[in-house]
Image (cartoon, helix red, strand yellow):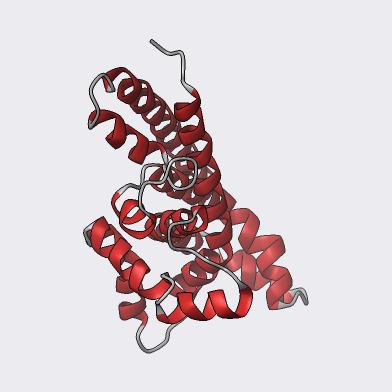
Length: 230
């Protein structure tokens, strides 16, 4: 029952790779946006917060279509990237990574923002009083205090990216070995005769990964709360 075929292994490997690259690449921007929302006051803050969370409320197919219009070969940004740097997203694994990053981004930002908002600002003030610069205070005080929340955000975003289907298949299709991620492979197996066993195996893998991610996130959240209370 759990003897995986080469096609199934490729789908699992590609999903892990795509989710990892997408989340890692979006982390710097996620940290910046989360910090801006947690600490700064500026015009349009509510609009930025709404835009960040849009992928959570939009149908994934709509998000994928927007990515196709924007980063496709004929898209405004996609055409420029291809002509200037030779970077292509549409119908490539790089596009799957981009879709994964976009869908996981809101969960990452939310977790990091909440962690930053719960840190003790007096410790940062004390650091600056002792002569540390804002950048030094961030790396030596703020970042360590918010680290459990950052990790929790990464885990949740990774789990979301790993299970992304609608935006991915709309943006980069379902190409074996190139863009056929775990959810797309499960869908493919359900559409062919005798594919139930393969779909079941891949679904079991997805459930195990998702459960592990939620448990890790909850453990880190509790550690953060305990440290704050202490």
